[in-house]
Image (tube, rainbow, N blue to C red; front, side, top):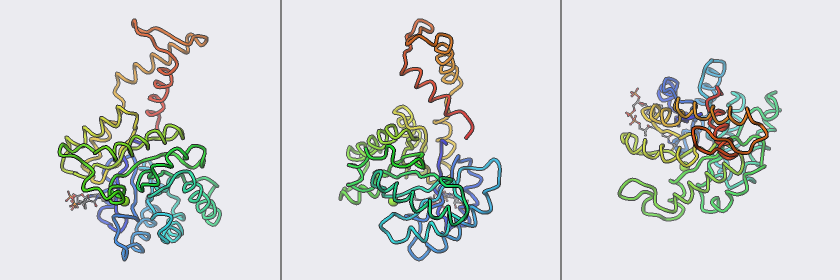
Amino acid sequence: MRSLLFVPADSEKKLAKGSESGADALILDLEDSVAAERKPAAREGALAYLKAHASHTPRPRLIVRVNALDTGLIDADLDAVVAGRPDAILLPKAEGGPSVIHLDAKLTAREAVHGLPDGAISIIALATETAAALFLCGTYRDSSARLTGITWGAEDLSAELGAETNRDATGHFTSPYMLARNLSLAAAASAHVQAIDTVYADFRDMQGLRREAEDARRDGFTAKMAIHPAQVPVINEVFTPSAQEIEKARAVVDAFAADPASGVVAIGGVMYDRPHLRRAERLLARIKPA
Ligand code: COA
Ligand code: MG
């Protein structure tokens, strides 16, 4: 999964556009892009979309962003959408492993009600939307087998911190948000799940989007969320390993396979040891079809 496109689930038009976007995943949003009085319509829209598209092959992964655990809305969200068997739930305002365990229990009960296999629905955590959440980034590891990804957000966090802005004059995130980003990256690595970069809100600025996506890829993120269909091709391109990278990774894996007792190999006059092997294996795992 390279690109995850947010689609407000109360918009039939955008749901239809999302299908054609080429995104690897659609995030059917019930949360911040949906006004309070539109929540019921969004739940219905999400369920109808899930039911209509579940059997399509190939199709994007279908993820639902529910409302946060403390809103009083999440139970109705899950009651509505679990029947459509989404691939995953995106949990906003997550606060560490305990919040994932809480959602896990809610899903387990509903999977039973709907006759779905236990654990059928994964969880992706939005790990940095509150100040408290930053201090809990180390608690995702071993929280739930459902957890498959961690991402981060700067908008709610900047509101909570009382910041004037979260980006500087050059469009780069300021340091509190880089801290949040970096903590989410470490949270994902420590929990052995996918690290997914946050959205780039200025959806006409393709250059800025590309720069931010390339920086994310450099640091270990393997996907980025999008808010507009035009962002999807850029994100897909940046997070698709090049033929050259794949060839190099295969050479490293093959060299170790040819000499299993060795901790270190030489290819073209360069040393490769175990961390290089892990990196090569991770890159090859990314190009396997989902
Ligand atoms: N998913 C699907 N379709 C989308 C879309 C999205 N996220 N964003 C825009 N589109 C559609 C528009 O409906 C429009 O369709 P049309 O050509 O049939 O009229 C087309 O793509 C072009 O859109 P554009 O006119 O450039 O933008 P807009 O002003 O209609 O929408 C936003 C701008 C920001 C309101 C819109 O991109 C959006 O809703 N994004 C998602 C917001 C969100 O979910 N936020 C929560 C996570 S941070
Ligand atoms: Mg939000």
